[in-house]
Length: 168
Ligand SMILES: Cc1cc2nc3c(=O)[nH]c(=O)nc-3n(C[C@H](O)[C@H](O)[C@H](O)COP(=O)(O)O)c2cc1C
Image (cartoon, rainbow, N blue to C red; front, side):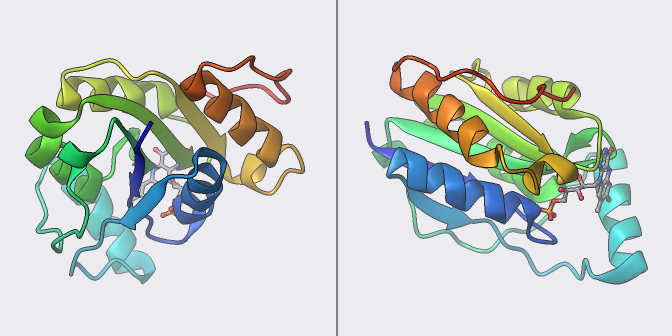
């Protein structure tokens, strides 16, 4: 199964998870970037406002064509209990080109269920699997097991025993 991991990350958490997932899935990986200044308090507020108003952002051209992949695994940080604006834009632009999807997100503590529902609506299709990790869980020793379980579900292999609760 030819697989692409595509993600946005403002501070590195989602990038960390994306790299682990890409490794477990032997997938290609591509980071969504934009030109918006998102550093510091102003960047935090700007990012939050974008999602509150459902704004699109201009994302820089990507080298991968999602139509060439059997599965596209899309990752986002949770912003105000919503999908981040760069990932929202990516999904709006490419929804029709995605054959099969899976989702992952990282967050401080809460919001993944809403984010996955939103991503599902934006794609117009249900994910084969989802994986949510809090910042704390990203530092936990069971992170590789959680990634392995996610990959096993996607590959239709027996799922190893789950470690740690899935946050909401
Ligand atoms: C604008 C903004 C809004 C956020 N809103 C939430 C939220 O609603 N729930 C939550 O648990 N974390 C929230 N966070 C924290 C991020 O989801 C969390 O730090 C995430 O792991 C960041 O991923 P990144 O390092 O890939 O950017 C928010 C962060 C930002 C910048």
